[in-house]
Length: 210
Ligand SMILES: Cc1cn([C@H]2C[C@H](O)[C@@H](COP(=O)(O)OP(=O)(O)OP(=O)(O)O)O2)c(=O)[nH]c1=O
Image (cartoon, rainbow, N blue to C red; front, side, top):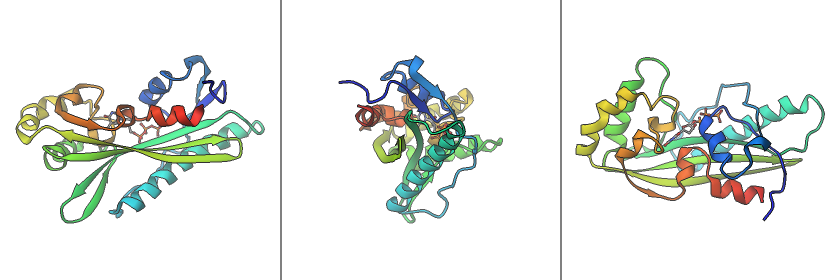
């Protein structure tokens, strides 16, 4: 089956997304144009899945519009533009759902990630969602892929957590871990797309592009 287009613009600064996309699309045909405005709407106060999903779609659409504005300055373009956003969603027993994005950038990141691992991940299942936005000419297609990730029990997390924090792998990763890296030592089960957890659900992207 052929790709609908022989070029694609990936609107992302994430090296993982580029690497993933190049597994299904020739690397030489991928142009990277990251969004300029790094201010993103947050998920504060959102505690039901429907509002979280809507916000996720709105974030990837905003990224897509940003890239489109940059490209469009030189005249209308027909190359498809793909943008994405990945979040971890946990369920709190009392207050519904809660979104974990990337850890804070200040020195408090270690304590934040420590709390996420001990309180939200150990022995439990959380969701990883990636929102996608694909612009093809006038048309915008948006969708969300979801994967369930179950962590090992508290003993295993306790045993490896301080070592994991010392690797600093958490930095820049949604939810503070990398399933494709050392973070895999904590993961007991993955239900759904693995590439979705890493930042780009390849099954969805391939379906949209073919
Ligand atoms: C959960 C998880 C996330 N991640 C990464 C994927 C994404 O790069 C990052 C989530 O960050 P995002 O905020 O989705 O994206 P970004 O700011 O890195 O990039 P963009 O320019 O496209 O907005 O977390 C992993 O690499 N492995 C994992 O297991």
